[in-house]
Image 1 (cartoon, rainbow, N blue to C red):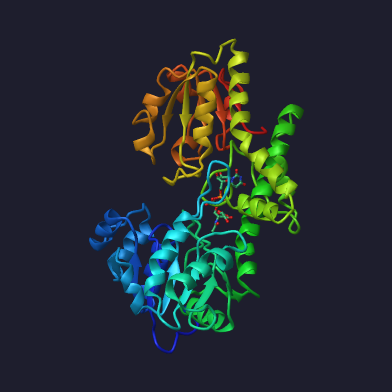
Image 2 (image 1 turned 45 degrees about the vertical axis):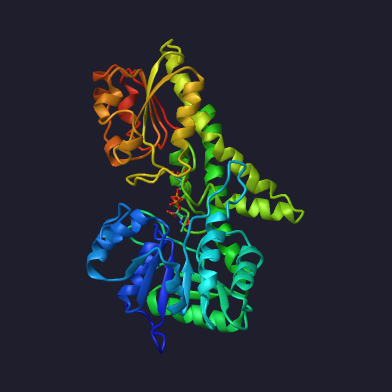
Length: 432
Ligand code: SAJ
């Protein structure tokens, strides 16, 4: 399915931030015939892109880089030639879970001096409701000397890139768009409809569009917390929570399966709820439920270690001084992204219990202690599978026995549990 319609005069586009969100957007807009400037502060990233090499491990991006052309640059002045400027920089959280808006503020300060009349600025970075209007807009106005809604427009279109997803991609994922002004909304909707095959839903204002993103990801976080709490309960009741969830999932309506694990990682799910929690708190409301879900999910790395200790205890082995292999550092299967990955919390807790930890992830060798699975297993008394990488899912009791492993925690419930039943290796899943 081709894009629905194109803007009358193809605007020049600038995209600020060439990561897993900005780069696919640049390549898509270029493929749709726009002249695109991809701006990034990383000179190294720009050099790679000039050689048509992808700074991120992604086959689709590597392929597209050979097929379309755009101008990678770290020169923000190109903005003065662009009718649409899209900001796709990261929005991490501080240790105290407060949103870190510095990348957004720096990007806005960098484009503002070059803003032209009638330019549309679109923020795609995930932010709490209110940031576009109370942080982005004032910087744009004060530096450009122009007035939003009169001289330029400001819109928000929350990113929905799902790393590693083979079905949903930057082109077919439906989007929502909110704007400060009507003209900005019309132009933003026209732009996205010109490059997407997914639907584009106009929202009533900027805050509604910002709220959509934090709500959809908070929805996922609380549902994961629900099954994580079930897992802790059912592990005491001797009920296999995964079988129960799969049973409940046969209900064709009003149920959406989520699955327990050793923690919730990534750049979205464990981060976005704090945006809403903190913003609402500043406005006098405590999201007790969202905060509880965060506490439950943040407690899963500890639960995984408790499961390991239970397995060692059955073998009358102390965790203190035992060598434990942690398999998997990235936050989800078969990708190399480690942001907010629970694996690192698991490693920290193991060390606090006096364990000697060896970490291995074939997708993240630069942060692994060893280079092969065999080296990780060799001499390890216990194993925690923290990421459901395909290579780990094939582990069998014989594989583990060979290296002297006595107990395994299946932190992603991704192993064949039953084959461990009559082996002398203690298997503990998360809720099964
Ligand atoms: N996780 C669970 N149980 C689940 C699902 C996930 O423990 O049932 C854990 C994962 O292991 C991971 C973390 O949660 O550590 C996040 O997993 P995720 O599948 O949500 O992956 P993300 O972070 O890449 O989330 C993205 C999000 N996409 C965007 O924000 C654009 C999210 O909204 C999507 O719902 C999610 O992908 C998806 O559905 O795959």
